[in-house]
Length: 249
Length: 249
DNA sequence: CAGTTTCGTGAACACCGTTAACCGTAAACG
DNA sequence: CGTTTACGGTTAACGGTGTTCACGAAACTG
Image (cartoon, rainbow over the protein chains, first blue to last red):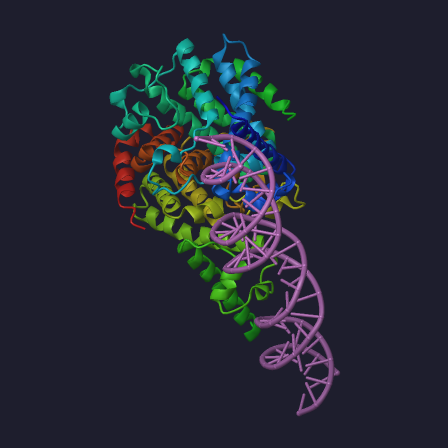
């Protein structure tokens, strides 16, 4: 049975996250005191819920990623199930739009140095991003339908093989061993997507290129040829650009 | 003539940068008070030299980038001038090694949100990275010798054409108009390099993959085929891996 | 009911960036 | 040369941060 106490505690956690996200959205800084004040508490009280400021950051980052992921899913669902390529690309566009619209949130989630490298448990060090799980699922859908080339286990380097067979981020028990290499392809895609988007968010690219999104489209096309769907690109690019155009939120 | 006053002032600037870099290197945080204390001054005195904390950060970031670039240049010079491909790749390896060995410095220089996007002068907003200039030079050397495919001006999108003809980062007056598209290729390479390295530095990749550097090598190879030097890769990969092995500093 | 855990407070510490008023000294000028 | 100015530093203070500690009230537990 779930006692009244625990329910209250759970509600407080939710309020902490909600208030934190509000602060971020308003452009304010995320700080223990600010969160506490807005909740009608004092800062030390928050230490009953999080062990440190960094823990608060991690908690909020996790929830922000989770919330953003449903946005990515909506973008994917704007395309029919029969077109997993378009679904994947639209999710990528949604990721970019979200990142550009919420730079501080993006920084929190994706440019936050994850714990100490010398941490004893590397297992929990890498925060499980629901977005990572979601994009992996999209890539799996795409593979099942069109079947882009995936390296076999013995084509992978030893380190990659280990990482792919015993992945840190989430469990893919439903993934048969013969296309475990799909996870490697996902990581490849993640690096190319991350490269453009992060540079755009940080402003380390020509503003005109950012505004037009041409480098992003180029990166998408480049990963597209990696997935051997270059023949489909004339059909796909208009879909991508259309979704880039209406980036309201 | 340079007065005694200005020389003293210049020396103080140098000391500020030196002390700041020492602090970063020691794992301490970069703060006005810490810098001032180590210089035997009080914090407000620093306001005679920098207008704000952010200005100090920008100054230090600029100098760190400059210093790191000479390291990249040394790595390039480990290869003969006749082999610009190896020179470029070795510089990339040096960039990765430096980033992994100096994560805070990397974050400061390359993951530091560059000013407000609504800033009036986008010209000076994007800090001129000497590393960017250096890598561009390497790419130019490579092009002059082996001549990878470069988009012509009318192949580029309008935004890209503008950005390439009137680049924000540095001046490339010596660059003839007919291979202005080279800058675009440089940006493509920059995004792929940045994607892997940033993810590695932030720990958003499987530790085993980071340690082995396999994703980095994959990214290099991928950009290699973009430069149409895949036939040369069997020769190049050992060079890359060798230089990755001895990443002492 | 008594005992214990949970959750909050207030005070305090050690930092941080930033501003203000102040002042000696070194350069610049008439 | 003397006078003036401006530079480069000081101290004090304000408001902000994360964090620790001792304490108390309120809520669960036996």
